[in-house]
Every structure is written in structure tokens, then in C-alpha cells.
Image (cartoon, rainbow over all chains, first blue to last red; front, side, top):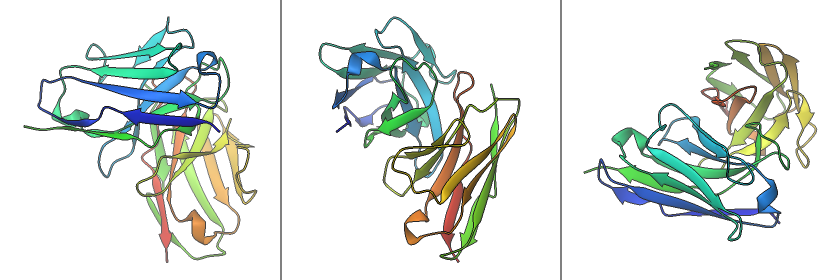
Length: 122
Length: 107
């Protein structure tokens, strides 16, 4: 069974940093592109970032470019999102999600984690 | 960036109704469109990919159609479990934008 479990969310002050993790199991993690998608309270879904299967290629939404870094450790079956210079508008539930098919670089995702809440507030 | 719109934003319907949600892209995305269902407090669930392909395990009352810039999600006979918010997403090009969502609630 495919499982994605996020952790690392919490309350952080504006300008602070946080690192999210997503532990994957039930599939060959190293074969899949992975994504982060966020959802502000009461709002819609926003794609944040993606990383290819070996970690050599990444892309970001303009709203987080230069502040967030996606990475992965295939030996640990874990996806990360390092978030720096956090702003109030980054407050959201952050989901990790798996690409629809092995080696698929598109943004279609089939499995999602349960999400982790990040709150940026003083 | 490709902008996605959905209509209506809210839809009130009864069990057994046929429901149609429309999604439009600001430029052609061929058939690179997905539909997701989300219930409160839960992660989204993939329903449809490539505009009209049904994800494994999704009931056949869900169907998708369209190409280019206009797409529809149809629920042929609304069931109690279908009351939720539905999002379309283009994956033709990064950033992979979502529509604002359509909430289907009980009439």
C-alpha cells in the first residue's frame, strides 16, 4: 500500500525557517517524481514544487522560488521541503504527492499524504 | 502561467441528480487535465486524468471530457459520498495550476 506521511509543520515567526519531511513507503520511491502542493485555510490547492526521481532537476512556483528548496534522499525514501524567509501568506497545509506514473514528469499526482500544517505568525 | 477557471463555484444538488462542472484553461492544454475530489480535512483524491481517463477504483458514474481549453466533469447520478469540492488541474506545463474549485453541496 502506498503511504506518504508528512511531518515537520508547526508555528514559526515571519522570516523564520522550517523543514518539512515526507516519508514514503509501499512503492519504489526512487522511480517517481515527487511534488509539494499547499492549501491555505479555506482556500484552494496551489502547486509548490517538484523534483525528479534522482533529485537532479527541480522546479518551483514563482511565489516560493528562491525561498524554498525541494530535495530527496532515495536511500531513506524521504522527500523534503526546506522553507526559508517564511511569510504569513505561506500559512497552509502542505501535502506531498506522488507523480501519476514512474518517471512521469508531469504534474498529475495520484497519491497524497495527509498534510502538515505550517502557520507563519508572530 | 496558465490560468484555470471553474464554474459554478458552488452547486446545490440532490442525490440522483446529474451534475456537470466546467473547467476552462487560459490557453490550450491539449488533454493534460486532471480532476480531483476533496472532502473537508482530507487530502485530494485523483478521479480523472488526461481529461477523460478514469483513475483505478473510481466509480464509473464519474466521467470527464474535453480538450484544448474547455473541459467537463460529469457525475451521472449523484451519491451521498459525492458531496465534496472538485478541482481541475492542468499539467501541460509548469507551474501546474489548479482551478479555484467547485463545492457540491446538498440541496
